[in-house]
Length: 493
Image (cartoon, rainbow, N blue to C red; front, top):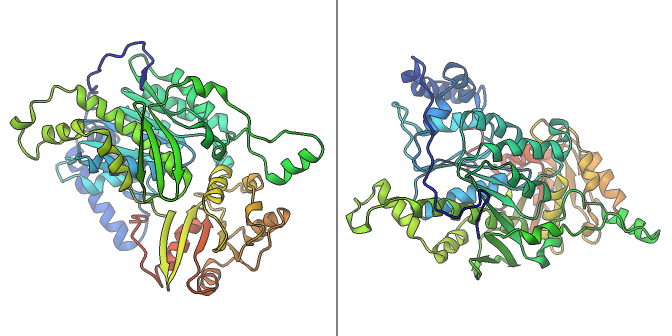
């Protein structure tokens, strides 16, 4: 159950904050922003976040004023792994349960990206037609965001080594996320199994509730902490010398923290969640054990929002006008656990996170990888047997320039099946890394389009897995869109 770190369990009222004073030219902000967005699209110059960059300069309070309109506030989602998928889950579930939700599309997780996304939704009067916002924020930019907007809810997922050239070591990332916990006014939802995240409970202000999501003991081996990780080759070598270092350790502090939602079992498109001392099993459309754990996180924050909705002084349902905010809040507050679980079952994967594209009769699964934990979890979740494997590694800014993290990934599960194709800017580095884990590589081609053509046309009808970093995933999807039906991801618009 949820635990209030202020020492009380009394229902709290929904907190509001005063909107910042608008500059004299604020009346023109939506028109200016929409105009810049139109010009950027027509000229194909500036990128999807460019309108936000312009508006941040001409109207610095636009973000805070616009989000300050929302009656149920802002949910901020951040962490190293799973931000995009979990944000999609939370937004999808809240909408499924009746609320009007604003969320930022994939690729817009900087503050200016959020501003750009707002410009597409507000009317010319600056009004945002939504009850609540669910926003994915990059770990560093989340700090800038909370200086302007105090989130009512924060969901902090994990800290892992990711883009070391940007953040440094993981304690730096944890420090960034601590600022989010300190700024949250309603409820902070934390990963019980990540020691650095769980420790952020101490940063929550007095009166801010702290909740956790967690794993059953027999699932914890899927999620080693960053401190636990070592490649199988190094562990095997250590074992031969009588050295047990590198094997996962037991972070026993987690067992004393009560989880509001616990993932207790996983199967083939099946998951079981424990809430209020009862297990709920459901079919899911999500791929991979890590996405099912993200679903537990999403459930925990949705339950936190629902608890506040239930505490509101809402009129009886028969007296509420159909379609009104009160009607939506009442429907959401009254949704039982079975409805929450049903909402989880309907969530679909975010683009590139277990997304399956049919290419000439072959199911091609795109799997985003950007750090050791993410790559390890993907490899553990998708059996290479009976499938062709391709790995595409870029080192552009959005991927992180430092690719040394590839040496902390255990690739030995690919020894038997091998890798059919390696591509991307760092193709030869990736091929070398696979060689050290004794994984056979059939072909290496740094040119993504030509490599992809060879890969998808080989072995027609056979399932295919493509592991790729962020920018390489965008290029892979763009190339696949030339030969297959690829859903619009909302990137670059």
